[in-house]
Image (tube, each protein chain N blue to C red):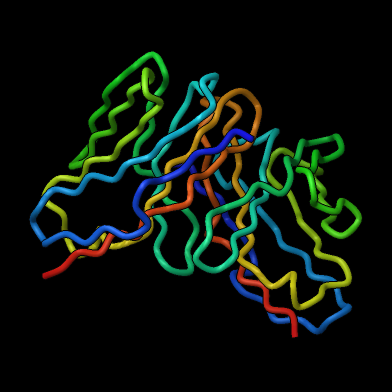
Length: 111
Length: 115
């Protein structure tokens, strides 16, 4: 069936470096994508979203890129900090439906 | 920003008992709310879509008689896990969709442990 997935389950980066987390989706009809951050024992925290009529969107230290041709989504985090350590999920949505979440990537920031 | 309050944050109950989890949108109205379940080291899985004033829509494989959903107002949805069993132990998370801007806001989750 349709799914949203991630390439890497764990990503380890040095503090201060940039991080890139990738996500592949298979539903070509998806028109809304969101990145969430989840810390242990907490609910998902919104990071940034993008609609299918865009290919790039920037926030504070974060950038989301959308490549509809290859159905690929990425989250770039600039100058990673210890507080960025968490599990990151991409999610696909649209219409009145709930979100479909990817498997998650555990981002580890090394000092 | 939009805030969703979810209570309790954790609960331990005995097998066979029922547990109610509340999800409230504090500063916006939400005709639609969603309930997710998350097992350790796994992703969130949508269980059901809660619609104010009408019956909830359940995802395939989710028992509607076991997971009772009530969405009686534009700011409150409840999930009741009936006759709970140890395999129902999980992290339950709600999400509310803002009627004004259609944004999704998540609650902080409820850790259910059935003993």
